[in-house]
Amino acid sequence: MQNALYVGVSSQVALQRELDVIANNMANVSTTGFKGRNSRFQEYLAPVASADTFQTNDRRISYVIDQGTNLDLAQGAIEQTGNPLHVAVRGEAFLTVQTPQGPRYTRNGAFELDNQGNLVTSDGYAVQGEAGAITLGPQETGVAIGPDGTVSTNLGVRGRIRLVSFANPHQLKNEGANLYSAAGQPQPAGIAGRLESGALERSNVRPVVEMTRLMDVNRSYTMVSSMISRLDEMRGTAIRRLADVA
Image 1 (tube, rainbow, N blue to C red):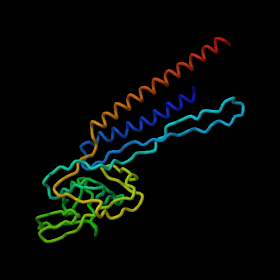
Image 2 (tube, one colour; image 1 turned 60 degrees about the vertical axis):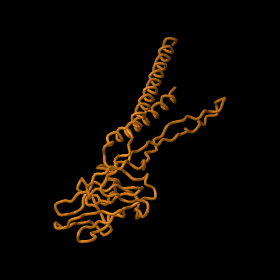
Image 3 (cartoon, rainbow, N blue to C red; image 1 turned 30 degrees about the vertical axis):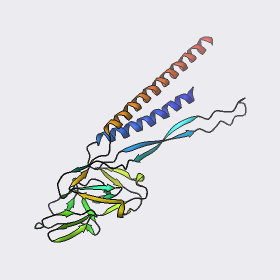
Image 4 (cartoon, one colour; image 1 turned 120 degrees about the vertical axis):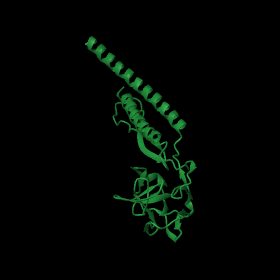
């Protein structure tokens, strides 16, 4: 009976984690360039008991282990904005920005110019080019961003936005503000990513799918909770009857 309770609790912990992932996805349905996540679980078989008094072989107990989440790299919808500073990333590449904590990576291409003429994200982080930050003068006009990230104005090429890719992008860690950090060093994206100017990539979260997952999780959680309650009642009944016999 105790084993069943432990299995039920492990299932509830995993379902709670999946509920958190779904809630975060739903909260970012309208976030530019957001990539949803999917929960990943694994079965854990408890070791068999080693007592010699059992007449039959032990049955291995199966628990649920939270193995983290996978980043959904599916392309989000591309929406035309007409703003020459906006870029949508196509492919599995990421934009590089500079933060107080160091380089971070994003798919949010809603760029703008700050008071110093630096190309920055909507949160104020400097967009990194191949040679560092990209700065435009107050007299420069006709800003254009090419598919390879080249930024040019009426005065010529001003830099090229640094696009990177990762050998295992699923290991990217969410840092908040639609930014990711990486344990390893990225590599130049090359043909793995291109930019579309005057457009933004919307979130790849599908609300209908997430709502369906949410209902499944709630139903599963209710079933496990009901099972645990019944087991607890059975244990209480057994204790009372043993007490009565005594």
